[in-house]
Each structure stands twice: as structure tokens, then as C-alpha cells.
Image (cartoon, rainbow, N blue to C red):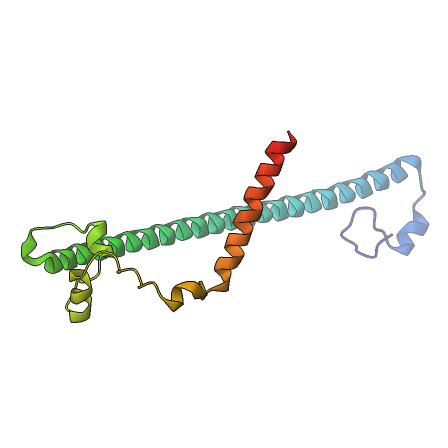
Length: 176
């Protein structure tokens, strides 16, 4: 027995000696001990319920943190997209303004492929002279250089490959 005098069934040694033990008395002690165990079990159940509630609250807080983090990332991505769109619009406006300035008085407000690819656009006098010249370069005069062949050996390799390919195709047709 426990030494705590407040617990049911706790008696001093002198009282134990004077009392006669009966089955009813043993039953009362057993019921008192059972009540103690039920009380401890209820306390344990209450503590477990509190722990589960704390875990659930923690899980909710974590889910809210994750959701706010996702929302923040989405907003940052949207801000980056908007900044890129604004930058692209600025670049388009600058390109349009530049094209209008370079077009000058010839009335062309848009940039065409010919204007972009052709030399002579700009202030460089050499480029202007090249643009004013003939479309194609004049062929080299026939002489000693014409017999020497190309200076690039990769052209020989390309010609050999093309010849071998044609030869293989012809043989294939013959074999069929």
C-alpha cells in the first residue's frame, strides 16, 4: 500500500492490526484502486488529446506557411513576367523609334528584310559605297589561278562525298 494517507484504502499499521479483513473490505480497496487507475487513464487520455490537438494546429500552421510561400512565388513570377513584358515593350518602342529615324525622309516606317540585310544603312561611307556598287562581284579573269583549283580543301572533301553518294545511288538502282 502507498504511504499517502489521502488515498483510499491507505491505513496505518496499527489500524491494519486492529481491523479484521473481510471480502467486502478487499473489494472496497480494489474498487478504490480501480478508480485511481481510471483517473490516471483519464489524465493520460486528456494529455494525448491535447498533444494531438497541438500536432493538428502545427500541421495547419505548416500548411498555411507552405500556401503563403507558394503564393509569394507566384506573385514573384508574375512580377518578373510583367517586368519582362514592360522591358520588351520598351525595346519595341526603341526599335520603332530607331527605324523611323534611320528611315528618315524615304517614307518607310517599317523595317524590312532588305533594309536590315543590305549594307549601306548608316553613316559609314564604306558601307554606302558597297551598297551603291553592283549586286554581284565580277568573275575573276581566266588565268593561271583558274587552273590551280580552289584554295579550300574542304571543297574537295564535299565533292568526293557527293560523288560517292551519287555512285551509291546509281549502283542501288542497277542492283534492283
